[in-house]
Length: 328
Image 1: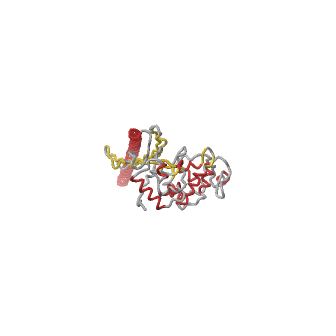
Image 2: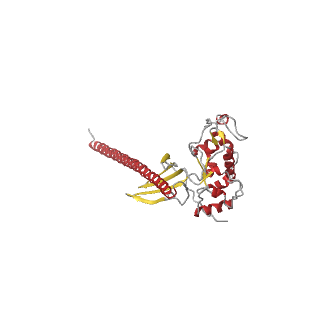
Image 3: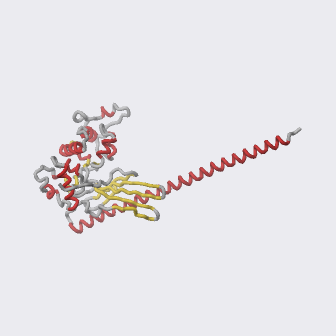
C-alpha cells in the first residue's frame, strides 16, 4: 500500500531543494554579472584615464614649446631655464566631464646625470669626484661610486676595493651579468652592488639618467647637488645661492662663477649650465573610483623641437620643492 503522506513529503523536499538550487544559481549568475560590469567599468575608466594622461602630456609638450618660442622672441640667442620660466606651471584639480586632472612640469637637469660617469667606455674623473661628493653630502658610502662605475664601464676589472664585475653578480643566488653600458632607467640602480632600497630612495631626488652627457642647470638645482659640483661649498653658501636664484636666476655660467660666494673656488664651468633639455611631465587622473598616474620624460632640443623619450604608468621623479631657503 502506497504511503501518500510520505510521497507528499518527499515531493515537498524536492521542490524546496529545486527552489534552493535555482536561488543559488541565480545569485551566482547575478554576482558574476555584477563582477563583469565592475571589471568592464574599471577597464573602461582605465583606458579613459590613459587617454586623459596623454592629454596632460600633450599640455606639457605644448607649454615647453611655447616657452622656447617666448625665449626665442625675447632673446633670440640666449636661453635660460629657471623656476621663473613659463614651463614652471601646473594643473590643479582641472575638471573635464567629471574627470579631475592634475599635471606638473619640472626640469630634470638640475640633478646629477649618473651616465656622466662614463663616456665612450672611459671613466670621467671630474664627474666621478662630483658624484663622490654627492654621496658624502647625502651620508652615503663613497664606495657606491666604484660599483656603479663597474656597472657602466666596458671592462671586467673591478674598481677599487668595493667594485664588482661579472664574477660577483654571477655568484649571487639569482645570477645576472653587469650591463657594461649606460643606465636606461633609474631603477636599474637596484641591481648594482650596494644600492638597496634605502640607498635608492635617499639618492633618487638628486639624480637622473639621460642618454647623453648633460650639464647641471644651476638655476634649477638643489643644495646637495650644488655642493657636489662645487668643491668646498658650504651648506650655508649653497642655500644663499639658491635664495638668490629663486629671485634672480643666473643668465650665464660666467656670471655664476664670478659670484662673491664662489669666485675664489675652482669650479668646473663646463659641467654647469643655465638651460635644460630634459624635463618630466607628471599626470594624475581621477575618474569615478579610478586613479591613474603617468610620467613622461621629455627632451626639448636646442632648436625647440619637443618629443617624448619614454613614459611609464607610475611616478619615478618627483618635483622637488625647496623649503626653508634662508639667505645667510
